[in-house]
Length: 166
Image (spheres, rainbow, N blue to C red):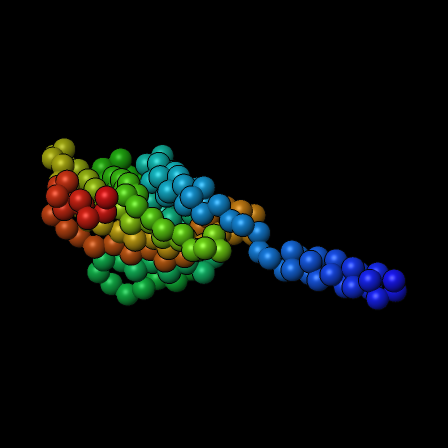
């Protein structure tokens, strides 16, 4: 009888240890949607408040910006100072097209397209196009901040150009 009780006690402890050691099941689909929404909110914020504030607000403290031309820039303050302040003659709008997230739901990336519009002193607009990748890290408070951002210039994308993303 003592052996049976000891066996049950050990079995219950074993089961508790197994269940307590299992990681919480993460909802990767929901977290990926959170990253996509954060990326879109990042673009919207840039339109309202300016690129300098947006790139700072949505950046992790150790973020690295890899400009299309130039050397990497590390740190929120340096990134903020490298970006143009709000300017009604300059617009950078981007849209995430796809993304992925790690199984642990603490890192992910978005890939999207952007359009930069510059209006000269006579009011003539010039547009530039490109693609970007942002790598996102989940913060302790559950929000997402980008840790690496890079982009490249391209011709104006067509549906055929981005069909591979579907």
